[in-house]
Length: 247
Image (cartoon, rainbow, N blue to C red; front, side):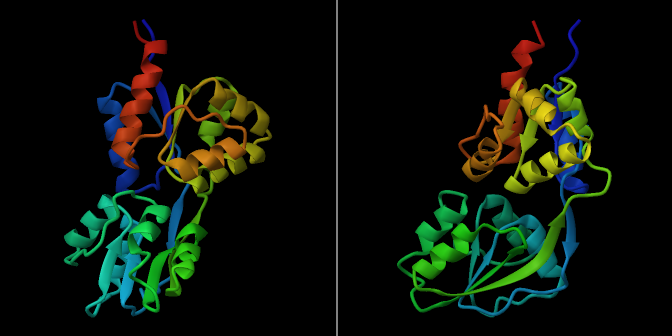
């Protein structure tokens, strides 16, 4: 009897990791929970602006906890999960781009933000594609760091498993999860072996920016879902990995 597909998942150690493990269990996979991101709030709240952009559920939760009031601003969410979090927190959402990326939001807003004050509230690792693109559209951009993302102490068991050829799949949900995975492999002295192990496994990236980061580090990416959605990523990766291990 073949073992379940062993899948590494790198979400922060909160309800996101718990729900990811539950999802992978339901798909018949063997989850390897290895949080590569820890959220450290700065205590800052989004500044005022004619447009205010939130880029993550975490950012929304921290903004809401701070008592943030949009004061009539046009509220923009980079994707539906962020938009849902805003609505759940009692905020109206005015703009969600068709493409859930920084480039997609820039494309949606370009042409209407010239000369406007645009506030971008996000983590300390936000893509410059968003802020640079808005400035190119001649917006007056301010960026507020709501939280910092660090690698949790003790993370990296998945890197050791990959190096030993014991990982069947990996789910990268941001460029930073790729960087932190490789940092953990470096710490253990197994970076080259871990990359080789990933390249013998099925690697999923949640979107093109994450895929590009992985490929720039010689990690071959097998799955990028059409929509940047974790559930879709997990389902597609497990489906691709499963035939190797199930009759």
